[in-house]
Structure formats: C-alpha cells, structure tokens
Image (cartoon, rainbow, N blue to C red; front, side, top):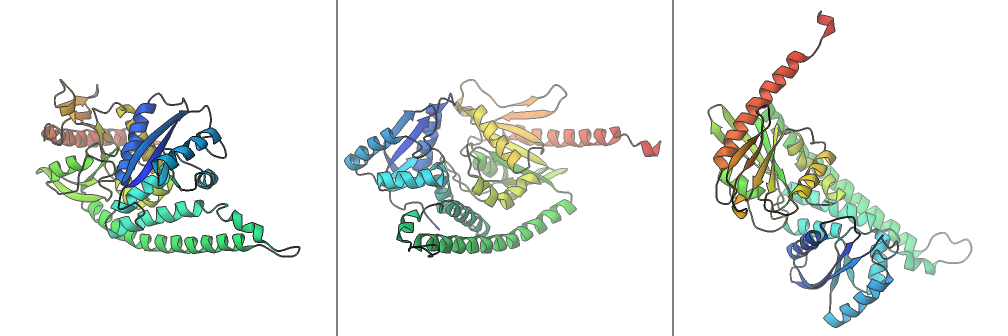
Length: 383
C-alpha cells in the first residue's frame, strides 16, 4: 500500500495561477512542502498563468512541450501537478510526457499511505487509495479497444480488462468497508462508555503543521510524534486531561486538515473524524505566524461542515506566538464573557495554563447557556 518513493525521485512541480487566488505564492510554497513530505526531490518548479483549465491537458499543449524539454534535460522521473486532475487529463499528460504524472489528491494519498499507523488508519487510507484508483480507470484501457473484432463481436480486450479491474477494486473496497465497520463498532462502544459516565470530550483540530500534536503532548504528557512538516501525525490519539477536581476531560488529537483535502480521504477517515463530530468542544489550533492563517481557518471550517461537525462549539487556539514579535499569552473574550480564543506557544509551554483556564470557563459558559436555552423553550401544551 505504500506508494510514496522510499528513495528521492527527481520531480518537476507544476503550479497554475488561475488569477482566482491572491495568495498564489503561498500556495506554491505549500505544494513544495507537500512534495517534500512525500519524499521527492524538486528539481524544477514550473509556474504558469491561465485564464481557464485546458480540458484535455489541464496546462495546455504549449506548456506540455516545455515540460518535455525539461524532462529530457533534467532527467526527471515524475511530474507533480499541484492541482486536482480529471482521470482523462492525467492519462493524456502521461501519454504526452511519457512518464508518471501525480496530481494533488494522489500526492496527499501517497503521504498518508506512507505514514499511517494502526489497524484502523491503515484500512481507512487503503480504502481512500482504492476509491481513488477506481475513478482513475476511466478510459485507461481505451488503447486496447482497437483490437476488437468485426461485426457481431461484442466488447474487446480493453473493455474486458477494465471491467475486470473495476470488479477487483470494487470487491476490495467492499471488504475494506466491512472491516472498517468492525473497527467503528469498537470505537462507538468506547464513546458510549464515556457518554454514560458524563465525561466531557475535547477534540483538537486544525490545519496540518499548526502544532496540534505538540499542544496535545504538552497538555497530556503524551509522546505523540510531532515534527515540523505536513501530515506528521495521522492517527487519532485520546488521553485523559486532568485540570482540577471538577474538570477531568478526554482530549483527542486528530489528523490535520489541508486545502482541498481529497474527498475520498475525508470519506475514508469519517470514522476517525467522528471523534470530532461527537466532541463537546473543539480546540481549533491556528498557526498565528502563518501569512494564510485566515484562509487556513476557513479551510478547516469547510471540512468541519463536510463531516457535519460545524455546530460543535469551538475555542480558537492561536499557537506559535513566539514567532510573532510583541505577542504575549492571553485569553480573548466575547462581549458577553465567553472565552473565544487563547494565544500561546505550545513548543515553549507558554500560555498553556491560560488554555486550561479557558477550557474550564468555556465549559461553564456552555453549561449556563444550555440551561438558559432550555428554560427559554416555550411549551404551549403546559400553559
């Protein structure tokens, strides 16, 4: 299942500016970080501007000819497109360039496949990979259809092979879903136990590389793998967090989100992300020093909508204040006294006590607000 190269392969990264995004430079940098995380050596980064997508080749025939020259001159193994391609665009590019072409979705899937650990996580990534592979079969075998017989002959080698591949992948997907159901049942049993005992649950969410796992380790004294790279941690880990005698909670570290997170991956990780859906509170960790922090907040919230966790209360955690001059730890409150954000540095353990305080205050505010809403419910049948 591990599709990420174990040794560095020479790659060209292609990024297209469609003039729809003012932060193109930053998006190129994120693409470079993704490619680096996947284990490729970027020999050349090619950028271009287009008003619209080329239906057949995505980047247009002129840019393809330019890439053909670079591939030969630089001895390139792989071309990576920092965008999502249709199956036909991917196939056409591979035929034109005569080498492996990877789009953004496949790149992210490969990173997950290389790093995921744990039985459930491996099943989830494999499901995403197989689902993506199924979508890539469209017209992959069309070159064989020229071998069809004359009048009266139904189908041909290309059609037969594609149907066989489809059936094989579909059966594997069905098997993976069955095995995942068993893992989900176990997780649901654990969740029901927590609910029965009235345990307050918190999930840490955020853009990848925002410092979620570092914060989780500081709060719980856990040893979850944390590194300054995209998707360093992929599995959900839960620990008890003792704040005081009245506030002992369960806190979970979840997989990081990213712009245009592949739908197949979101679907496959839905079981894991259910920890987020069923949480009482989300700690939304933000890299306060990142130039695209507002965009990253929006991207995370978009995924939360997709997994139906957008109505779970949030506490923003602006991390990495050590990278911003003049910024100090503090709690930010709304006009009615609700804690809405905490500023801290997880790696320096600076401001984490304020986060603990904000969690207690947020929980109390949520309880009071819930009680007030229940009291305000009009029940005419009781009049």
